[in-house]
Image 1 (tube, rainbow over the protein chains, first blue to last red):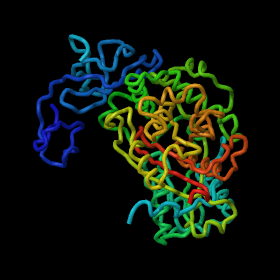
Image 2 (cartoon, one colour):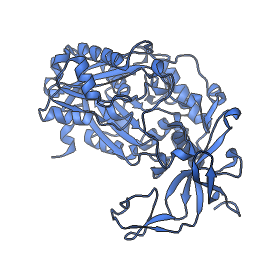
Image 3 (cartoon, one colour):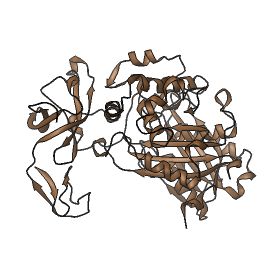
Image 4 (tube, rainbow over the protein chains, first blue to last red):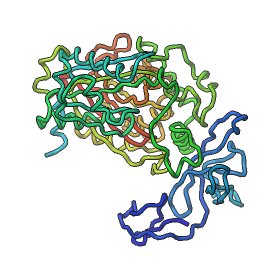
Length: 109
Length: 384
């Protein structure tokens, strides 16, 4: 789900009580496509004994907003700007539900 | 009323540094106070002459109260606006307004930190961002790495270009006896350094050091009554567009693209008029982004611009002449050191690193994760 402004129709992330595009307080939750494109990506280097390298990415959602997340399912070094990705909700140890992305079928967006 | 009314109306008449290159066993307040004592002595003043206080801290909740009590002063106005490392350049605006309206007569801007000796690593009091923290970004480097990666993707900027920024800063630092890192450094060494967050290695990151700085400002009408040549505030402007990196509209364009033109407009100047450039280089990508956003080169051309030693000693544009945050000092927040270096250059006091015929300096502060941007233009008496 993503917030959408009832007045200007733009989507909003992170959730707010006031639309940052037009100032309207009329925001409602809408189903989200789960589709996105990697806007930028980095590999956070970490020692193998601490869990090894991991990915942090900025993903532009199909609906417009951008969010920080990570791309799973491939090596963190293989995540590339422009890659089409698909949202997935996972259970992360110690964190609970977490929204991550995996490469979309069919390659680049 | 217009912003250009503030051009040249206040002057810096005292500067001081403290705790450089390192100050083990000393508190942040002691380091700050050393800088304040030197700045006041530079201006021929005593603590009791200060009636306007502009300060900030990475660890104190009410830094103006702590600073004033420690110094034994009773300010008529204080401001501790916290926008990260650019705060102290930002303080030029409320200090100038307070002086112009007679709310105070002697304004002190100051900062000090024992981050290098006291904590030993890059630490921030910045609160975790709810929607970023679950992905474990390392604050702040992950955000800057994302910006660097996007710049490389979009414009073909190379890791060698980032390394060129680090090497130029080091070459300036080698001319500055107070700089923390003065060993020889090559592009190959930067390229071979341990990767932290791709594409940024350990040598693409600023130092973590001790250090403090202080500035004394007065109205220009009395600036010539002080011992040192006055340095005038010609234009200052602030802009901020986001808090966390996921909120930055375009990772290749900072709000310096707004603060720069507004500061130049207040000063009635253009990039070609600037003799020395002091940019907040928390990471090597910063220098490239700010050279572009402030108009020293076109967007996307910053990587090519810095090649072949162009911003190093002997190059065509003198950038970060003290060695910058990369090689001189970076005690948590660095903005005040940009102003102090500019003043020393404009007074002709910069020793081996002095840039000849310096009349106009640009200082550009950055805060957060490329979040807050403040540009200031300073000049000597010939620019009024």
